[in-house]
Image (cartoon, rainbow, N blue to C red; front, side, top):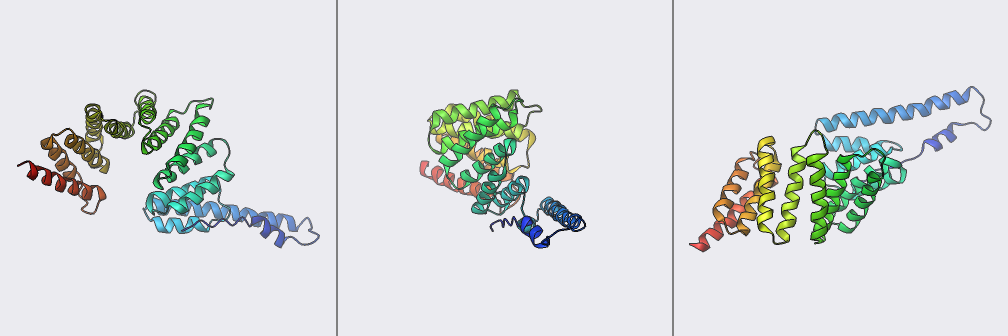
Length: 290
């Protein structure tokens, strides 16, 4: 589902404009053009209402029909396609179109949106590039925005981890964690737990199981306190269970996999399916040790 960019407002105006426009015809044309602008705004509001009701396809259909969408609409549409409709190519086109129109802060924010799409498409070099460009803009901003800087640092760290540039990945992720723990007020424990989860994965790949377990345990403790019914807790518990397997502790691995399973009531949730798969592999390992 690709966005349709129809920048035809000018063409409409020309079609309506007579060869020798009089003073009375110009106000009418301006009124029509104003109507187009208002109509676009109304369509965006209607799409927002559908998204609030989790009616993703209906919202996407409305966004697709907006004539000459602005940067905000393009990015909103792109995020919808990526997050809820699994249309990464459509999302990429939206954000690329937005980048052509964006200036200043909107440009930096659009680069972050592009980074998320490139990550989803496993285009890690491209993700690293756009996140680095966004970070440069936010770091040069007069008024420091720690939330956006941390997002850029996390994006860069994820791209470097995917490219197995582990030392650099850990450095950027630790910087993001420091900002989220000490600069951002109020603290967001979900975001801090995400940093800790990323760090645990990087440390695991570096072979530092002890520190990986420490970070993964901290992530689980935070999410247990603030998100008992949140699927991110199940993901963190699965991670911790996997690290216990790597550490040779199958008893603790089972404990965390079973906690992950108990935390997800939706039988079709992908985290529940991955937890069941982890438990099945664990049972095979347990039987082989008997």
